[in-house]
Length: 287
Image 1 (cartoon, rainbow, N blue to C red):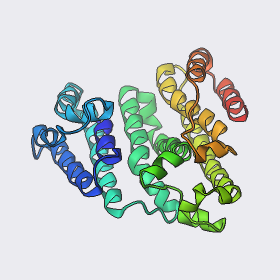
Image 2 (cartoon, rainbow, N blue to C red):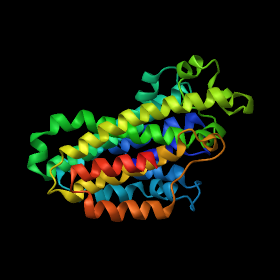
Image 3 (tube, rainbow, N blue to C red):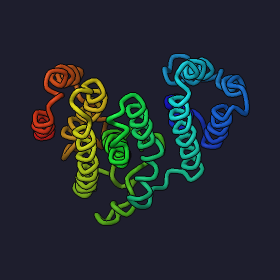
Image 4 (cartoon, rainbow, N blue to C red):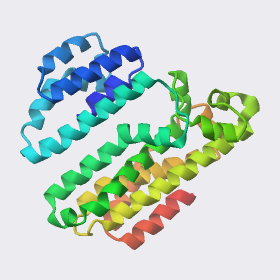
């Protein structure tokens, strides 16, 4: 469901106005105002080799699968996908202008933080002990989404710049005496790396809150914990290789498949323990 919204907002081939119109149609589909075929008919010219485009082109089938879920779960998902689509459309209308850190957080909440809220509601629906602490979990779930998206901003700096978007706040760059587009000029390497370091500090603060969220989930819900642990630790490791790394100004930073596999294996064995998880977090962060 979110992937449909992601494609409509984040593809590299549509102009902003078309994205806004399609996101509006998707919201109308989600609200039951129009049939999904009204939307998918307008996506017939998208690249069939693009996995996200294929999901969007089959939005009707995705919705049919959604209707197989219990009504309350359907509503949790439909609500957040609707709100994220509206937020994405608002940002497309606004354009690539991130002035302050609050602006950045607003954008990141719309495209990622809402996923954290949705997942927490789904987990709480399944498990009563999580419902009892849901008020504690929800603010941390928002932070979890901001954590993952801040790391995405850092690792995707170059790719985003090439498609015309820079998510680094103007205010942060101004503190270093440069403008966001100046980050990629060779003569500005030192202030650019200071900006990235500040963004990395911000990501770290959000990641710590993501870790706090996981530690609140009872150990007996190991699969729920793993569903949160994996993206968190992938982000921790990605941030570690992005910090003080001039390469992020030239190409997207990625961790290796071997690292992904190792994290998954290690956490399936030790991820039930909060003490072990904290130590493992620190190890990935420091390496």
